[in-house]
Image 1: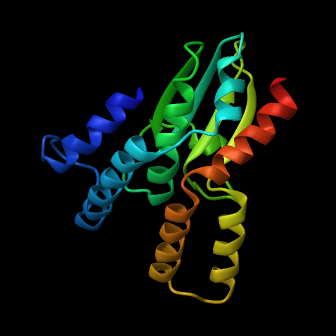
Image 2: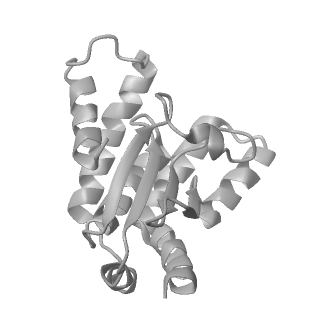
Length: 185
């Protein structure tokens, strides 16, 4: 699905317009929260200008596949930036796959788990040239540290969201920019 379809999927779920929604009530609460997060980043998220310029300079087609879910907090904080970056060049096609509904996630496991979001960038020959996910390295290291210390999952989620709020998409874009400069220039 494209980004607009993905975004309207949030709205359809929240407005009870989907028969047999595949999410339980707890997930619906996360979806409501993540819908607000996506809207906020679309409105206030700023692109790294060097990265945006590098993407604008792309001369060959790319397909960006993003595996996500509306209930995933990490995806809510990354997806808007992936979308905004993909709009920088008409040669980029963005496809969003729902992890739990016929996605390619089995081919892109993180330490054996179906962690999301996962961004796969493919060249014009459909060859994977980047696989990124499921969150920026700096916060991933912190999450692993907190888990190793036995911190409760709810505390980890709060820590994660506070980090995303302060980071404002910069770490994801820095990782993308470093990869782009090394591989696409």
